[in-house]
Image (cartoon, rainbow, N blue to C red; front, side):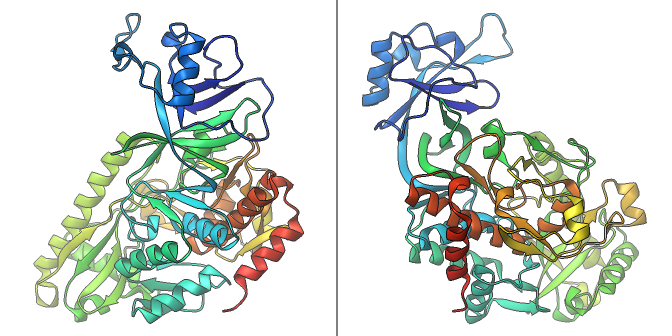
Length: 511
């Protein structure tokens, strides 16, 4: 019975215990799913060119025992028919672990997924690309949480941050936090809940069985190539990387391929408290306009028409002062160029501010985010599609897992549009609307859930629910549904809503 790994663009892992020959099955396999995967310690990867060169006995031996392949098969070689491509030989990939819930991405949605799943009794592994938990909160240095007046982890985090002296409220729904304290807190939460974490690890392939059910993922890291299996996999990558690798349908931008929302590089600057407090965002929205005028007068016209400064105390502030337009978040070359431009602009702005002298004479760019901030990524097709009509009408659902109360927030798609208005609602007047659990369950494959901004919805609904308070609430629901699916031995869509609702309510009950 075949098991496959779907990858970009065409290679897969194929493991067969019953097929008559080791052959490439392509993205779709046709045999019936077994109740559980056969025990194994590795997967066998093969390319089309190598599929006919191995006997069934060789394939079975490598699959079951993890034996090394012959030396001749270890290297890659240039394709004779296409010198611009590389032929990858068959190889074995060790299975690093098997869990109830595998969380792909340790950002706000991923952390919430992992914690709620663990608190619901599941074994959990987080795979994170960067060197800390928190995603956009930490690697992205966002510094500001919005639409977080919600129960559960959304209420727990501010309480614990406040005890650490790392919290500053901004009205009832938003707050500022200290980035390093957030990193430590999230790791503490994982320790407390016995959640396993591996950093510096990127998902490069998805394992599916013959019925198209997602069974796990393959990663690349300093440890090499590893396979990970779980009863349910949750895509919390932000950009829907796992869903795309699994072959799910997805949308991006306003019309599939842009115009899309711009990216922004966050930074931390230092200057005298008097200078920084002058433009503190918490003193009102007009401070953005004043800050832009001040930067322009100093000699730089920022690419974001409403540059924002959040005073963190002492001589430190977080800033968002740039836009990078028309960048595809799944194109590494484009993101690289955008990152370089954005970092350079933040440096130049701090330089002209320092030249103003006076209270700004010690202004410096202290650090920039490890990851440029992405507003717009893939939206994976789910079993419900949240639309602009849901936003306009304030939709209600029986299986509602949270309610978005944030406005439709669409940042300008071009520099020219930015000069007229940095962001707006596109005429959509939002009412608080429900996000149903069905929007978090992949439609095109089984065994895959999503949480965060990559859930199933259109461009306008996404412009509201994408903020991180909602991502946390979605993650809680995905974690509960995934844990219950593992406990009951079923798929997430087959877990009774009453069971999900009851468990979610218990986790979100006031402490």
